[in-house]
Image 1: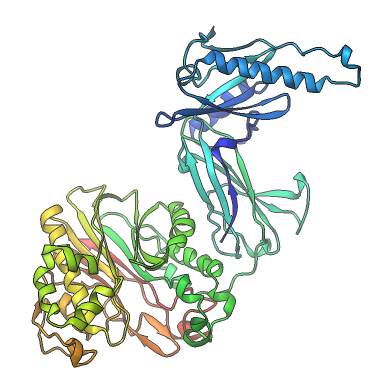
Image 2 (image 1 turned 90 degrees about the horizontal axis):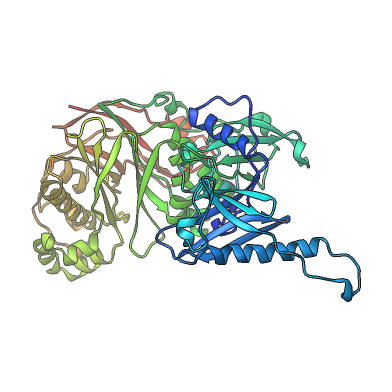
Length: 587
């Protein structure tokens, strides 16, 4: 999925001072850091990584043209390290000056004087390493001086996607230590001509964290240079080059027109919400999917790299404050969506399904919300072990076939409680789920929803009083289903046909009620799922009307856009579902 450049913190190359750009325009700390680097233009760098929770520290520097990485005990005395450096220096000098001569003419190279100074005074050699190697100290090795940088901002991972499409954002996967990604400096380059070689084959193309190649970049590779920062210092830059060149995009996508309604961020008291089943790769890449479910979809358009390009562009273009996603592959969350959406001010949490490789992801705009708590559950575990559901478990246990089917399901409920950073009284209990899929599973979905609603009532009443419920997901339920009647009308009679959706053997009719009466914020679209053999409304964003009202619903793609390539997914749409997007406003 990504062209990888894993930048191991224990084998960092140590660079000379970073090049100074005279055209810098940015925060004062950037300029100050650049000017500080000028002072050390003629001084090598010694990078020290010292973390209190670890027993070892590392010292990395270049000695006689050779990269040195020393792993030493933090409690060891400084003198031991300096003596080791002196020995290494003497060996290096001996190798460098070695010429053909008789053994009798050879003599050991003298050891250079090695000292460490701080604030103009030499550090005592009986000082322990953890105290001795301070930021700003100077390591003296003979006539050479090294500027000591303790725990400088460091990129530990830098990766670029394997697939690049013109018109689609390229979001690097980055992990940083001792720094912040929003304090890093970025420069993007593109080749002057395809497959060019040499340092002069690159031309600068951008300076933001995310780069979107254009049609003029088709056939060219990209390179990203990232200099990690922490707001006060800049670390060693890392460069990553894409393995593949930019390819042509698919042209118009189903979500392009929708983005015209979401091209600006919302402001308090408006909250933009998206619910979207993005189609897990574990389901899209099976032989059954390719030949039976989606035979009309070009095989390359079912590939994860291609679909992730479309998904990331679609999601970023909605400028959502809250994203509830279903069918999220574990690797897609950690390696693709999280790093991509992080660049757009979105943090995410993930809940994997029991015994599965996919699950639920909830993202929220970190400048708007803070997490107060997470209260995820596996519905089968909650039903079987939580006293909250003892009465329901007893009731369905009278029908063993139904009980067993419910307890075998891997369905989970993701619950994330968010607090507005603008108004601390505004708390949202964001629930996200993907209910049982089977067409004859209406009775199972009813029981799953009863467990979910009971759990949500407990979270709101006992743990986060005053929180407002926002419940989104793929309910696999039509508007006329018992599940929708339960959540919107507040009760379902034992005579409802869904209790008998799979025959008499699993029949367990009961009158059921909900502690909430919710409203479908996006109404009842004609369909949210459109495949070759089925189309219908299965996905919902439900809200408490006493606290939230609908400001606007982003129009669904028109039928012609959905069916241009017969059905979904397609070369212009990454999933078999369609995202629900709406703007809610606090009352």
